[in-house]
Image 1 (tube, helix red, strand yellow):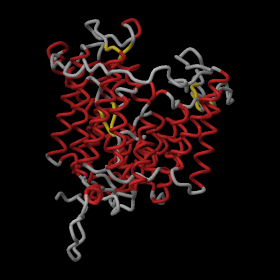
Image 2 (spheres, rainbow, N blue to C red):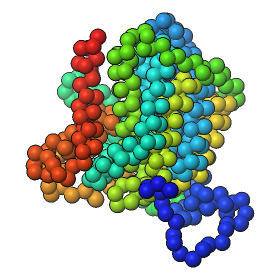
Image 3 (tube, rainbow, N blue to C red):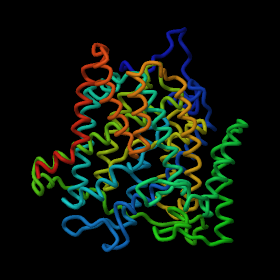
Length: 494
């Protein structure tokens, strides 16, 4: 057992659980963590509902319906939308179940939005899609190596407790900001100042955003009244309202041209339900990037992938563990090493299937808010993702605006952890503040962690507290300095 495993109670021997249900309960520690089968089921369903958009969105980022509207690589290749959708659901389902069974934590897995956008925008202009996925596989293997040798866990343990709490709070603001943007409640102003604004021209003028507000109120009231299955009931109820309103007013999806439309998918009942998956992208991997663009350029791309993957996942796990009440006073949670290893495997799996690196999703907080506390919820979420390969049209019923309302609620729950922070000493107040504020404002968990690490070691050491800082934290902070200036470095090496 690793140092981070939860030890068993050294009391009188307990009789072995009898029956399959009892053995499964004991394995996942459902009763031990104060949960129930119904909570785990509801939590798994809610996590899937708030994550299901990735089956629609990931193909829009990585692929396309034709070459003229897809991310075309350096050789003119592109990924078909339906194939990306199939492997996105498959990889998410397999990795979510694997993580639940091994790490036994309620963290859903899917293609990470930061990395898939980075691949589509910055990488495939230099290499082919197969070579880009080869870089993702290498990134995952490095993360697995760091986790299996214990280095990733050492880095996790070197993070001071105030920064771990700040990461949780920052993720809460980040996840709420994602919800506000996805719903159209917050939009870009198109001007330098202010860069964002309320709704459309400073007012709530669209039906989808109004549905978001309705959902936010319904879920908030249900949670305040401590109604069981508050988030699930709220999602279902608001989706029904959305379907009715769409049938009456026929708003339609935005497609980037209709600002009054639904952000991603319109809530309509599908004309067809079953769609056979095309898994032709599995195994389409090449390691020829090093030859095509040179060793240094390829290494810099891998460095960016590793840093983003490594710290995004670590920060997300920290925040979710705190929300679920699974973290101890130092921020550690059960089976930390196993969780970190499996997360690295998710990157490898995402590269092999061309779904992009799979990692822990902050939307898992919605399932935790519904009561999920164990990996049993992951099994439910994973099964639903696998089913989504065959029932892709059904995943489009719940509009992104409804899921966004749940994310804002979860963000509020996570931000409440700020009560555990001490702001009386400015040498820690500034790093804490930067960790929290940089995450939502730069749309990146890794950026917030980096700003917190760098400011922590500099401000604390120059304030006479250098001896309290772990040497490993200095090393990671220097790594983040390189991460933040990687643009000029990449330009320097051509």
